[in-house]
Length: 214
Image (cartoon, rainbow, N blue to C red; front, side, top):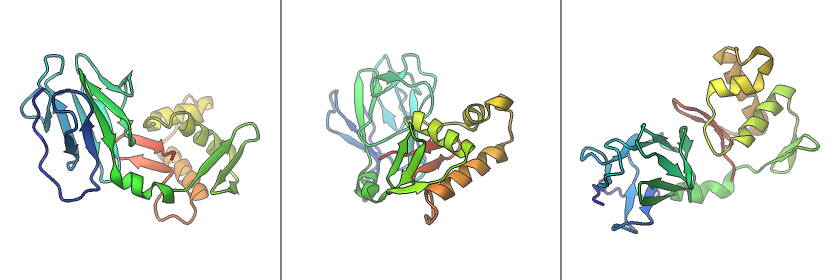
């Protein structure tokens, strides 16, 4: 395997990929761009010289807070934690990304540092009780349905179309974008009324929404 490392970054808090297997085991690649391209082509940011790797295999998008992994129609697929990647996926510290025979571990020092400050969400399904940091939260039927959908799919990003179909099955998901956005806004305000920005339900730019569970 041959690689082209990203240029060094002074911040020790930058998200990164750490090679767990392969000739360059232990090497780290800092994610400092909005889009980091991984593939066999020499034009990629991280080059994996392997015949099983497509020229443009996969990409990691970074919005300054969250990193999102997406396969680019590769021939042999991209794997996340041993499962083939079928949709855009918001990476979490410790996730294993596999491209051909190379396995990377995703690390985000900043997430590790601030994780203890994030609100603690608890959902008790038998009683339909929802609490944040031990305080009970009253949710409407649609808000509760939305939260459960996020909870059931907390390992990935949920698109507006998917949310529409799950929350408004009576309309077969045929609702306006503003209805989805309004419901998400109300849910955020109830879960974190004093937060300047949501830590639980986050927006992944250009992809959708995701529930962050710590």
